[in-house]
Image 1 (spheres, rainbow, N blue to C red):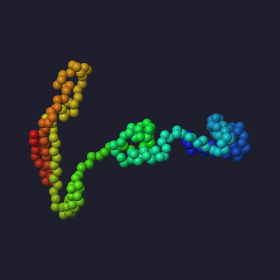
Image 2: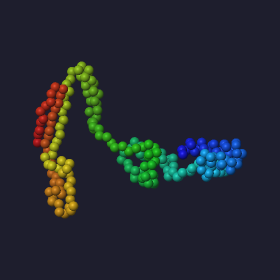
Image 3: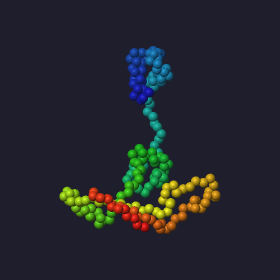
Image 4: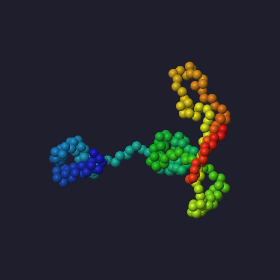
Length: 210
């Protein structure tokens, strides 16, 4: 039974109890037993009305909050829009558990996000952005351009770049061959460069360099 349904039932019971049954409990109970409402429920509603003088659940105090309003505002200022701080650091500053901090941040709709990768521009590059944007816009408007795209990829010559060679299975590591057990790494691994370009007219031949 939902809260609204429970409150509606309580209201009907008390209205009948006061206006029809003239506050006679037995008459009220017998009337609502015909609706298959539990006897204990009917008595509880009537008793609550007689003792408290109102309809509805008693106000629940709930679990006391560990942080007062001042501490909550301090927590928000420490965490919101900041980096380099963890739940345990916040918990240490507020003298509560990190789970408590997590709950308060959730209540304030403050979520943890991973930083996204973006290019790091110098001041000079930032100044050139609007100039290059205007130049690109004029080029596109005049339809005087040709799209050319290229890409390159470096491949290691060793087999360690293959995902299946990054680990091994063994029932006894002491019996596994060193060639299987260890990954031998050079400071500067030999690589092969693969490059290719494509345009609206054609595609280039692949270029390889070691």
